[in-house]
Length: 118
Ligand SMILES: [Zn+2]
Image (cartoon, rainbow, N blue to C red; front, side, top):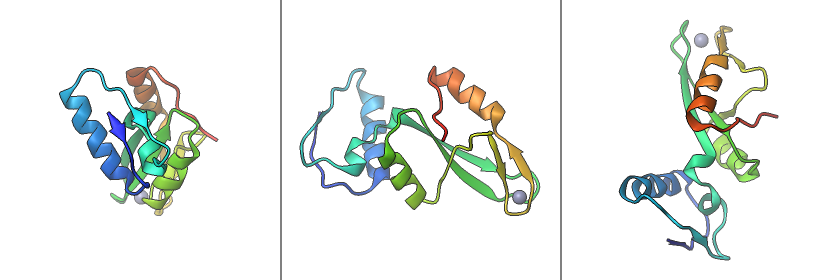
């Protein structure tokens, strides 16, 4: 597969990668010099988590990354996601503390990779 893109939507890149993953067993990526931002983020480099607050129902969008790619932080913060917290705990707007350590274990077990936290 050959990617040439001036960047753009991370979601579009994800859709393309998801589509290809469903249809092909092996995908080889060739990223040209023009490919930036969205073109360089692979779907298996991160995990998106939507955690609903059990108290107020507010949905917190969190991303967990497996590679130290700063572009992931830029793109996902722009999309309203928060980085996976170091102590695996987030405080909801209503003040309720949500423990993400179970989710962290589950993701790391499923992917066999370690979530990078700052
Ligand atoms: Zn809440």
